[in-house]
Image 1 (cartoon, rainbow, N blue to C red):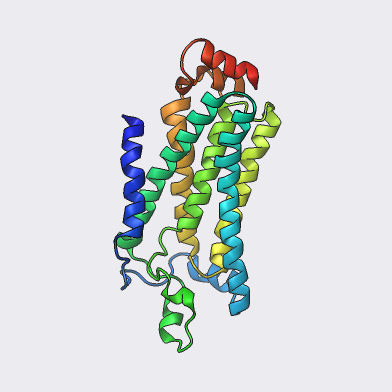
Image 2: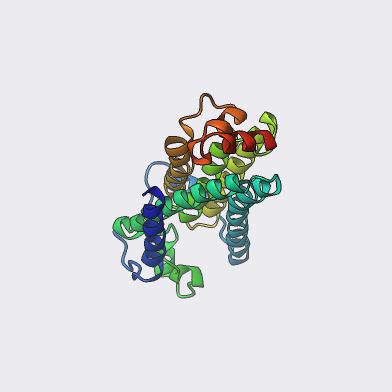
Length: 250
């Protein structure tokens, strides 16, 4: 039932993003709290610098997804001879992304917050292409949501499974991915594509689904949070010898 629901929510999120027209007129403009102060302090202004930081944000965001979902969730368990672990952990990742994505995409139009650069774009006679790219999809930050979903998955998986075979290495993997995801969020602010509150909200949603869903639905049956105990007790690994063999192989 759980994965059947994921099979519906995931395509629905993709369809919502691709098919439904974007909101053209914002429902909300301007910053709140510390948004304007941080924007003024760290945003870049030259077109060349903005182009570099936009590309950097894309590269960093893709990198954390590849590391957490592609490498650690799938390739490492597969190369260690536990394809069942690779499959189940990958399915958990798909589940988390399906739900975090549909919520994030739905919020774009229902909240309809204008990008930080919206007013500048409206008043400029030489507005660049970014001014016409989803101008009201500022809240929450989709890039940050995706990056922190990956980081949350990384932390949940490395806390409960001996993916690297070492407590220290698994803890460092979680720290690594949280750092990369944070860098992605900062780059989005520097690129003037999101306010700080957009990034913080995207991070909270992403980490909530990335860490929370696997922990609540799959790992909470573990006797403790040590890697070996998490692996052997995880209900998704099945009963009896399958789970035990997977723990022994790491």
